[in-house]
Image 1 (tube, rainbow, N blue to C red):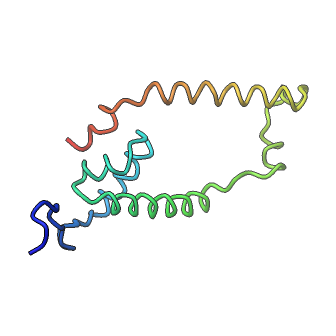
Image 2: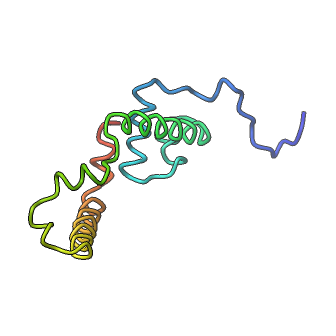
Amino acid sequence: PGDPQAPPRRSRQAFKKLKLINACLLTLIIMRSGITSLLAATLFGIAEGTASQVFTTWVIYMHTELEREHPLPDAEMLNSTRPSGFAKMGAEDVSMIIEAALSSWLRWATRSCSCRSCFGALS
């Protein structure tokens, strides 16, 4: 019954659940490589919606746990660990140094991420 041209409908059982380690791995791969949830879903043999839900759930969980373990420093903590050379500089100079370091790190991070290194664990 129905339209013979219509694509076959998937049953609820067709949506495979991921093991805990694979859910974490899916999240880390998306974060490391920037692939879409559709590509991640294909790699793990799950629905795109499931991959998106897994990713969102794990990102929220990681944020909660990491924030508890590594809270953002307050001004007092930053000042106590600031290199002595920074005290002689103005705030604009320090901001320029930090921005340059972050910019340099981001260029390195985006250059060094290759799909081979990201997906080596899957093969």
